[in-house]
Length: 150
Image 1 (cartoon, rainbow, N blue to C red):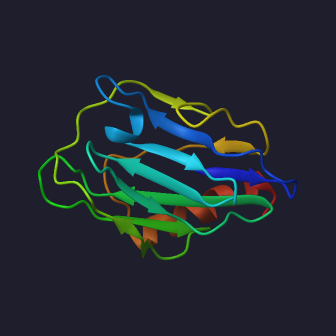
Image 2: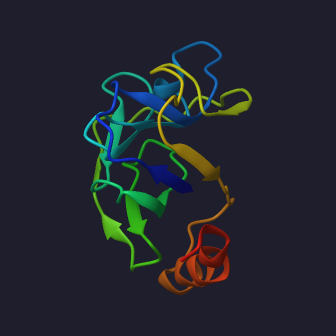
């Protein structure tokens, strides 16, 4: 996802995107991604003692922050990683649940369980049905950065 951060103080947590919950909250099903007040991102998944992960702070200006996770369809711990500006994937995922994911509803962007993005901007949210390689995330960064003046 491409995120534009300002140097203004942030007004609290807000939702970058989520898959709406059906029987549980969005963060207890497939995925919910939160832009934290400290400008880092966090994401959550699975029911009961949900899994979570985090990224470093996004820069002022445009930043591409990628996240990826294994499927979570079984009871095995999920793995999860982040990539900042096309860098190699870095493991930063905390598995706390062995519950298989519960399929969620529609994807919504810019609002959700933790609030609406009211400061900064979301340029793109791209979703893939596989875990991208280091080369693939770097290629996406290189192919899209000029859109954001980089």
